[in-house]
Structures are given as structure tokens and as C-alpha cells.
Length: 154
Image 1 (cartoon, rainbow, N blue to C red):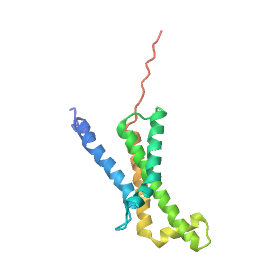
Image 2 (cartoon, rainbow, N blue to C red):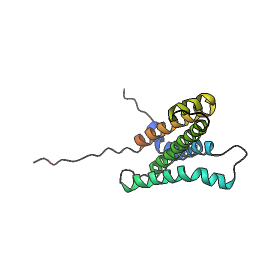
Image 3 (cartoon, rainbow, N blue to C red):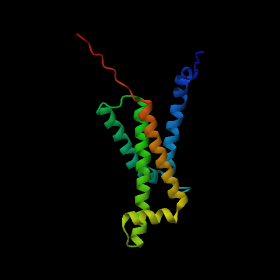
Image 4 (cartoon, helix red, strand yellow):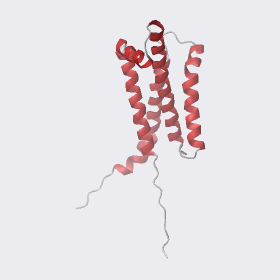
């Protein structure tokens, strides 16, 4: 007999509900490291969000301008992925710079030392970066459009 699968029927609903939820979770993945626990001021938040937010917007606008990405959700996803990635990279550089100020060592050595000193925090950042890579893959696959070219014979 022929077996059918009802899953494709639910795909539009799934996408309509879960894509915004996923994007909000990606935003929180980047916002969390930028908010200092109990000591965030409006000025410190502006400073912390400026570079990652600007780079996220630039990435999204560049993808749109180059014509490769036109879907709204895909643009937002790539912008958020850039935002989170830059946030994590900056956190590692700031921490490594603090270690290098006290101990003469290379930048990679300082980053390794940093990770060993605070495994929960910097291990968590590595998990966040893994989530960024997953979202890039999800977004690329979800909004991948195969192009069909018709060839006339004769």
C-alpha cells in the first residue's frame, strides 16, 4: 500500500510559529553575555551593544544588497548570528587582553588560559558559538531555493 505523511501539511504553521521563537532565542543568546549582572547602566548597554549590533545590521544589509538573500526571516537570522558571533569574539578578546596585561603571553595562549580560569563562562560562550553555526546552517537550508532552468529543445 501507499503510505502518506501528514507532516508537510503542518510545515507552514510550524514555520509561522517557530521561526520567530527561534530568532528571539538567538537574540537572547547574544544579549545575555552583554548584560552585566546587577550593574548595567543605559550607557554601558549602549557601549556593549553598539559594535555587535552595527555589524549585524551591516551583514544583513550586505546580504540583501548583494542579492543573495531576500527573505525577511533569513536576513534577520543572519544579522542575529553575526551579532552573537561578534559578541562572543569580543568577550574572548577583552578577557584575553586582561590576562595579557598581567602576564606576557600570546593572544591564543591568553585565550586558552582564560578558558581554563573560567570554564563555565567561556565554555558557555563556545556553546553559544555552536548555536550560531547551527542557526547559519538552519537558515541556509530553510531558505535555499533550487533554481530550475528550462531548456527548449529544437
